[in-house]
Image (cartoon, rainbow, N blue to C red):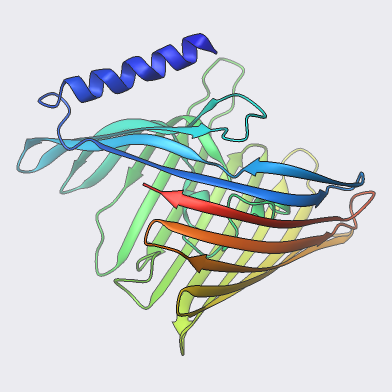
Length: 306
């Protein structure tokens, strides 16, 4: 642990001390901590959760008018003190130019990126990964993203075998629009995983605004490569902003073919104190037919971005 802290501190000092070598360096992060009452199937208990709190460094260095180096080193920070202080998130280096960008390192798969902002409770207990596969951050990857053409963009993630007995994998996605819905009225994507973490997966996503309500829809099919077990999934989400308050709701289904159906439903509210800070609360409950018992979580917390 001391070695990790020392290495991180040395990295920060090196970046800050050499601005000429690391142009346009941004230090960013998010602190997100909640107090919650949880029942994960074994009884109710209280806990403090650090919900994927993070700190990172990213930037660009222009080589010439047509080419730039891009880089990022992001770490999850365990603010509640219940685990390792630092854990690697997206960390890569690459080149960006007129033909798109190529990245090498650890990165979210195209399938994971394809959700955009449709999962309104990402990084919390209600995250879609609780019922579905496909939310993968992969090591040993080569990532390519094309330039945008009339709002359309293509992306590919290739994960190398790493050793003789390893298995390579591929994640591909096509995107349309802006995931923040600021530059377009609609965000849509179609993604496919081939042999990623033992699954073949197809996912379609669409999100847009209708009379002030932001609505989202995700459809998914996944197949376990070894067992052949399949699942069809559906998720719908909605949020509505009233002044500084945002009301949110989400419903998710995981229908296992020839087996049981799992469902999850979540309701939440955000209250914006400032551009960088919000208070929030949510309640989520899972009806898990494939498990011995159901789960539910009631949480309230604070999030600060910098």
